[in-house]
Image 1 (cartoon, rainbow, N blue to C red):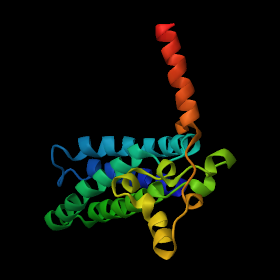
Image 2: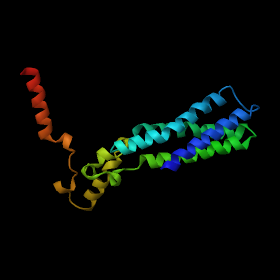
Image 3: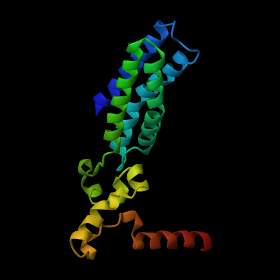
Image 4: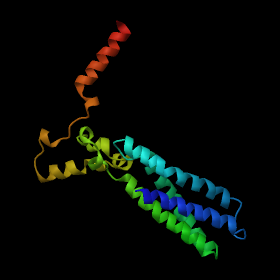
Length: 181
C-alpha cells in the first residue's frame, strides 16, 4: 500500500518539474495547479495510514477524493495528448492516473480480515466503504446465501454492541434521569 502512495507523489513531483521547465507549453494555471496536486499526493499516505489503523471501514475521504480526481483527470489527459507535442508530460500524467486508479481500488477494499478480534464480528455494513454503502454491495453475500438456501436468524450478522437495544435503553434512561431527575 505504501508504494501506491509514494508513486503518485513522485509522479506529481516529476509533473511539477516538467511544467516548470517547459515554459513554451505552460498555461497560466499549469504550475499553480501542479503544486497543490503534489501537496495532496504527499498528504495521501499519512492520511491513508492513520485512517487504516484507526477506523474499521475504508477511508471515505480518500475514496471520494480519488474517484473525483480520476474523473476530472481523464479528460485532462486526453487534452494533454492532443494539444501538445510534449509527450513526456502526457505520459507522466497518464501514469499518475493509472497509479491513482490502483490506489483507489486498494482504498475501497474491505478491511474485515485485517481487523482485531472484537471488530472482526462487526457486520459488513460497518466495515465496508462509502461506495459499498451507496450501492448496497455489502448485502450481496446475504442475498447470495438467501438465494442458495432458506435464511435463518443465525445467517444474519450480529449487531454492533453500541446499537444493542439494552445499551440504547440504558443510555436513554440515563439521559432521561439527568434531564428530569
